[in-house]
Structure formats: C-alpha cells, structure tokens
Image: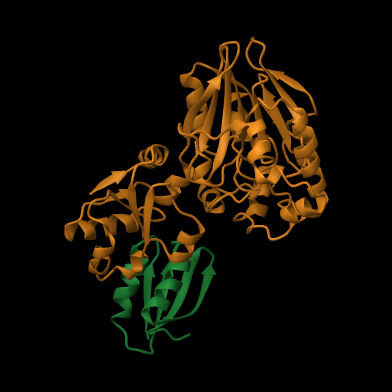
Length: 373
Length: 75
C-alpha cells in the first residue's frame, strides 16, 4: 500500500491518465464534491459499510486499473486500502484525504510579459480557485491569493521576487483570501475594491477605476477595470495589455452569479453592463484568466485555465443572451446552492471573525459554486 | 435518556469512532441505547448514515461544547 499525494493526482488529471477512485466517504459528501478527472472512474461505498470486509465490492473494482482510495482526512482510506491489499488488490490512498486535495495549489506558467517578466496561474484543482502571480524585474504582484499563503511566498522567494502588491478582485464568498496575510507577512500593499470593503476591519489600499500599478521597473501595468456584477465592487485587471483577470465576473464556460452578497436582482443589470458593454470594448485578443473554473473540461492541456476574450464572446453561453429579461432570469433564478458557509467566509474576509485554521478548512469544504451556466 | 452503555471515543479520528461504535453496539441488547461521545466532526453525517444502513436508530445528537454526543438505539 502506498500514499498518493494530491500533486500526483493533479498530474493524472492534467495528463488525462486513467485512475479508478474508490471514495469511502458518505454518499452525500461524495455527491456534493469529489475528485474530478476526465478519464477517472468512480465507486462510492462508505467505509462504515465495509467494516466487516471488502469482499462485496471486489468484483466492482477493475483489476487492470490503478486504484486510489479516498476519504475525508486519510484515516478511513488507509484502513480500506489495507483490507483490499489483504484481499490481494493493490491500492493507494490519498495522502491527507480530501482536505489535502482541497488545499493543493499547482503553479502553471501561463505566459511571458513583454518586458521579460512572467505570468503564473496557481490552480487550486480540488476547489476550482485560480490565483495569479505577475513577476517582473525582481518584483511580484499576487491576485486573488488563497489562504495557503506559504505557497505564494515560497514561490516568489524561489523566483527572487519581492512581493510588492497583493490584490483581491472582489470580496470572496467561496474561499478565504490569503491576501491580507501575505501583505502583513511581506510588507506588501493589500488592495481591495472600496465598494466591497465598506465593512472591513483593517487598512487596505483602495482599487479605483482605471488606476495603474507598476510591477518592477519595466512597463508592466495593472489596469483596474471596475466591473460590478458578481459583487458591487468587482474589479478586473488588464495586465501588460495581454491578460484580462476577470475575477468572478466571466469564466471560461459560465458567468458570475450576482446573488452571493444578497443582491441578485439589483446586480443583474450591472453584470450585464460589464459583460456586454465594458468587456466588449476590450481587445478580443486578451487572454481571459478568471478566478475560478467549475468543471474539469475548462482546463487546457497544460493544466491552465484561460481563453481569448474573442473566443468567449463566440462560445460562452452567458455572453450570447440577447434578451435582457432572459439574462436576468438566468442569473437570478434557479441558481445552484450557495457555497458552504459563504456568509462566514465573507465575514472572515472582512476581518470581522477570525476562525482558526481547522475551522477555516471546514468552512471551505465543497465546490466553489460561484457561477451560473 | 437511559443509556445501557457509554462509549468514550473523544480524541479519536475517523474511522475509529464508528469502528468502536460498531463493537460497542454488539455488546448491548436490541432496544437498548448506546451513548457515544466523540470530537470528530465527520461523525455527525457518518453515524447518521451508518445507523440507517445497519437498521439502528439515531435517537438524537447534540454538541456539548465541542463534544459531540449521540444516542443510538440498537435495532
């Protein structure tokens, strides 16, 4: 029996390798959220139904496929993997369980900047969150950092870059931002859209429409485009005239939902204005880099998540609804369930509550659900 | 509630709370109640699903300042 790390599973997802996953969590947790891979097969049998033995499921597990046992934190998957090995089947267990899967970040280089810098996307594969690091001439800026802040600070150190600016495109409702912590640790400035930050309990720099921030001494600017819709303050960034960081406004195969701060009706118009007018005026050559992906099909071959704005205007259903009434209906009716603990997550990101790490982990369990499709 | 047996599974991680619950319930009579104490939050859903699939009855559960308590009637 061996341990398989979240990083190894991520590699299998990106390279479309085959894997048979026996998920031994209870059915409701499995149905809510699982490891997604285009070429993965699944069997869900709770560990507590296997305490008397695994004989009943042996014929449901193909002998010719690599087998991974998954549970919430690891313990049960180790037990079941041991039982399977005793029954003559080779099995790995997911090291750290779904907890580790939820927290794994995979850095992927998504492009070069015109003056020699680099652009990285951090793919939080288990939860669908995307963060960004712009590196130029010894300086770094981070956008939409997750709470696993060491990954970002270690990565910047490896690249010999000093983190100068940390941005959040909006006040997140599905995951806890690492922005403030990184800024405190490194002395960087922490930027938030002021309209999303009215209730925050800490100091921040105010992202205003069309402000610019330099990263490095080269001519790389981050241009903030005020783009309300998902939240009232949502802001997009255009980096180096090449990349459009669209936050939770526009995704590859879906668009942002406007209801997580309780204002679906009022913000549906803002969202339409942003997507159908504001974004239309931008260059169709911009590579859209959102703050989330929803389904594994949105991953490119290298594991990154990005597509040209022009392509999205042609292919993303959310950008092709001519009738305003129909659009309003799509973004405000029949919405998917709201993310786990989203109110508490918002309050944490405002600094109103300070849950410990274990509690933060628990609040973030599950998929992100920031989109409407 | 009168429990025939009390199982202290505090501090134990999954899967041990359910492994021990299964053993303890084997030691009481049908109709009697087992009281389980655990600090593993995953136990809330898992014990509910387990009792359902094994024919026992989860009478109630409560959070007593961090200790999760369950009362299970043996089926």
